[in-house]
Length: 137
Image 1: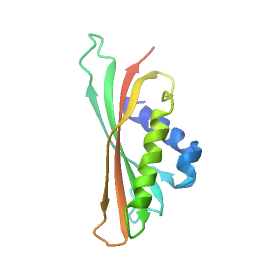
Image 2: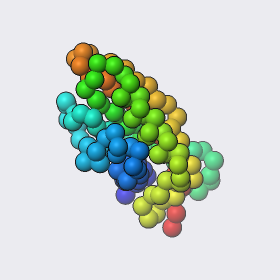
Image 3: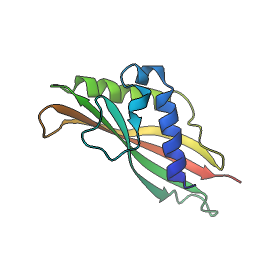
Image 4: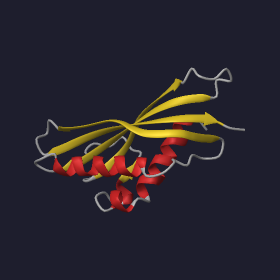
């Protein structure tokens, strides 16, 4: 399993089990799909990028940047902003638990932005989660 996949699994689990997040987005609408339009409201597990952290001769540390897309049919951005805020709170609430073979040394929301979709009916939020992952034996 790659570090990116390990992070995605842990993020989905964290969000699907968090009462604050699921009060706004049902756990069944936290998905890894390439679907448009997405269910409303939904959190779509999106793109990821792995970058060598450069601080280990063993090359066993990577910084994973994982994007979460938030979708909600609404005329304003208020609902998407609330969901993004709950995602941030959930990520920062406790250490992220990764599958066996990986350890999350740090996890944080490094970027959030909200925008109106060109369809004129949907709000879109993009949350970037940055996780420092160490491979462990």
